Length: 412
Image (cartoon, rainbow, N blue to C red):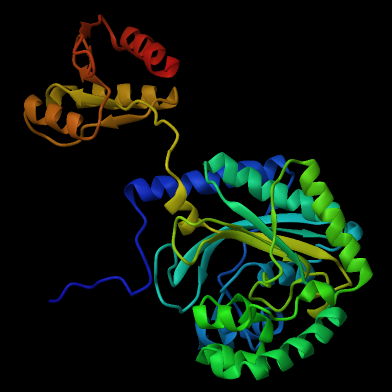
């Protein structure tokens, strides 16, 4: 029979990559909790209309990238392509808007988009993300950006921050008509995707990575020239707060993000180390989305970061605990080996009990292969060997050995 292989665009995460994945998630989780966010665990499958109504019917995600299917009940459902829409749905459906509507939620998990696999981008990918409901101040925008920067700093990842304002929906509506007319005059210079976007989603043309599209829109009208005074003042206040916190940023008038629900503040943390798809964390404000989905009029903002992209940029993992390997000298001491391993683990010491039968030489070879720092020989008079120095010591009983070993391991 032929070997069954994983589906293109999906991956197994194991070994060092699994450690990087867990390092990213645990670092983010710690900082989310420091900022007093509560976890929400969201479903992987949602009614497809959720994403049509939030992400936007004319976006690439809905048009080309979602995994959509009909379940056995005849319902049209989709594997979630992003987390914000699900979080907003839960905020409304679960009545989280009670008590004044203020909620701070974080999540992590798999998302699904059918797109061309490349470095840091898979068809099943994973995100960390957070949403804040019930506040509409630029101070909340600044704090969210600061939290994202804290996560990246703790991971040792260097990025640049780009920010922009999209204004409110009325301002953007006027701008889109001006931009659409401009693009129609340059249509022959645009890629095929952008030609279609002129009518469906002209803002996305400004974000196209194709060189001909970049050149064609170099002198395109700038959104910030069309936004309301209120949105402009808000943006100026955000910049003031970022400067006060010592956060460097670049104003990028072409930064629009790919989803229809954004209003006012948008931002991206970008690296040049992983090719064209250099955005590692991004987000912004979506003040009309909760009401759009049938909830109360609630301002909101959030961000998401791709875990796989962050893993590519993590260069140094925290030092691992020393591994202790317990070897029953002969099978008669298997029970003693089990007891010693159990006591070590209860003390928080990473312990491997050699389960294979074989010669002592073969067991030592395995202990060395798996990176054992110390070896405990379980016998009537147990012995402890330091694999780094070669020193070996015999003890009258297991309790004395465990006390000495715990001092050595837990001290480092």
